[in-house]
Length: 607
Image (tube, rainbow, N blue to C red; front, side, top):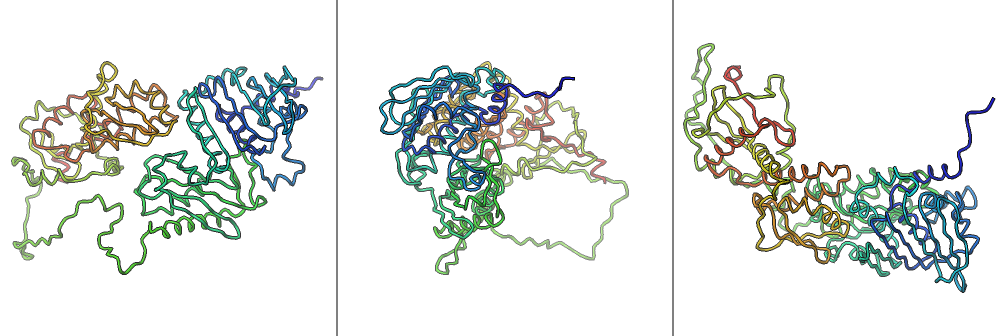
């Protein structure tokens, strides 16, 4: 009787292993750059075409390999970095498993030129699907040069699951930065489709950060330094006023190896409590030095997850060191009796309107006077008086935060989900305003309208109706707005240029800066930054399907447009808004699914 369990052929086993190690073009870049650093290279050049689909070419001036080693390096679990099992607990190199080159060779066409120091002749090897097609002497400089072509050529399903060129290139830049930051004494260059993205000369950490992210970062960095028996911490954190709504440059390294750890990331975020606004993220570049015997890096094939022996202690030390660094540079509040502190307010109160305290006394109050109301009678509100100019001016000055706009409302059993209100006209309607709500009387009862959501619904429906047929009316800015933009972000904006132009945006790029020259005419200037934050988040979100991107862009525009302070300028504008809302097909809910209308019936008032 023959067995049903059989050994997989080598080429299938290699493709399965490659699926764990090589997930996308950036994985190839990461593995080959790590090998170059392990080989002692002082210069590493990365050349990319079509975000790695067509070509990944990585050259280094490291030690190089002999002809025998050049052939052996493509075998599975062949490595020069481990000799005994105990070496796993004293790792000083980036790689150690011997799986990277075998995995790459299984799904690509690889060409390797390598030469040892002081040798006149090197080696040329060509591999396709783990099969060596050529192995011959050649003339080449010291070091190694890998050419990776036709990624996933024999695994078309994996190739089809790759994202757009802009997204894949963004991942390549991220891996490049994660290796260029800790090895600031090495020269790096990155070229994409013939354009030089980065050329980094050997320097110190601060200069490397500035070279990667722009000159403005030089004044944003706060040094952090702490040494204990458990861990030594060095690096920089960004100043609180530079925190962003989207996750920016957040890097944690242990022994110069980048890793991801939500638990330790939380310790840094806690250090910034009450210093940054809610839902914003600080930047940090922190390097941990720990005894290799106290960590385990052999947890995940990509080696980005690490287990720490004393994680809780490291959490506390990291939190304290960041707070101390901020305190030394007068970022956190300090005890200074010579300084006037009466005007220092928390972030939560800085945007609130300052009002003079008032004491109200009811001079007609009589505690011995009793009033009675006939049973069953219902007091009807009087809406005959129009809103006064004083209350309207107060409404103009009120600042409404996004958190309040999207605050979760308690749903009651008696709440009407679908309102069927028959109103011919709002020409003579009068309103009472309270916060984000306005109230008016109808034949069915009192109608409560969340007018910001109503405005968002009207804008969203109007733009979506004509968005793909004709562009949103654009208004040129007298003075262009400037935004820092990294190369990978530029690629994503260029990739979505057609949709963004339809949205009414006009811009140009220059020296890692985006100059915004035109914005949608319906957007007030005070909300340009809000729109840009939302669009950046949408563009960089890989989970959003291309078919939904237009919907998300319009949703972002309508949300930013409804944030203006003086949304309701007069009774006429309130009537016009309500008329336009009831002309919408879906008047009960905002585009984000929140309730707009609520009807309070006379029976409910009687309760």
